[in-house]
Amino acid sequence: MAWSGTALAAYATTLSVASDTVYLLAIPGMVCLLVLTILAVRRVQRRRIGLPADADLRRLLRLHRAVVLRRYAALLALSAVLCTVPFVLDVGVLYPLVGVGIGVTKIVHYFLFGQLALLRAQSRVLSVYAPEFREPVRIVLGLDNGTLSVRLGQGQRWPMMVARGVADHDAGQQGIEGGGWFAGDAELGGVLATQGGDLLLLVPRDGKQRASRRSRADAARREKERRAGLDRLQP
Image 1 (cartoon, one colour):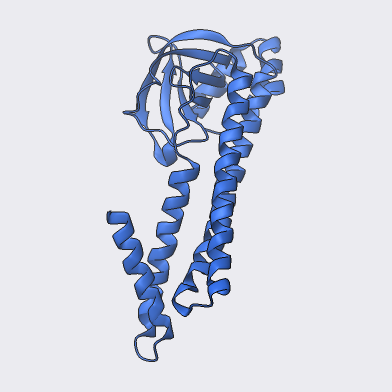
Image 2 (cartoon, helix red, strand yellow; image 1 turned 45 degrees about the vertical axis):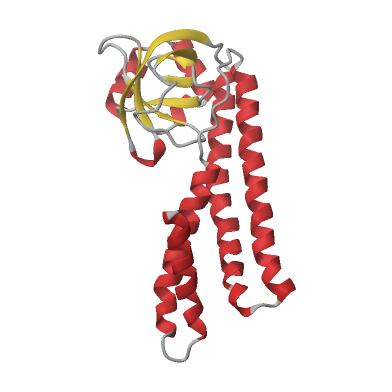
């Protein structure tokens, strides 16, 4: 309800652009409408997918990609409607919807490209490493931009990892802690499929610690890390 009220107020303020006296009020209205559009698109495109847990990580990856593309297509369809209806009906108060539609198109592509890049990175890891069940998985804390700091295994021996997926996650989220299917190197990074059906890319959080662990790894481990693309990933 708060969202719709704010959106209506911002939209109404934007209409003042047609006025000869209070047209400057349209500027904060446009800014507010842009912010709301960004938040709304992110909420749809990066909403948690919540697939059933699956030991077949490549199948889970395909399902994640399908959901991401389906949401993208739905937002593009909405954008097309917003850009078309004002011209078809030729109603002046609807023309700001064209700007909203264009904004949706640009913003959803920004999120989509990041999601597809992450899915490609996960696919490369899965082409090199076979998954195995690991426990426990513990959330250490929530980070910015919907990422988490997690640790695989008990004790301080295991490095803290930055975990990110195609959806936003928070520290209080259910279905991540416990155990999960992990493909990768527990010290150098990999892909984790959680019990809640999330697919997360894990990269060691501490760069110095990561370099130290890599220097102690044998040639075979470093070669697998290179082929999986883990050596080029940043937390």
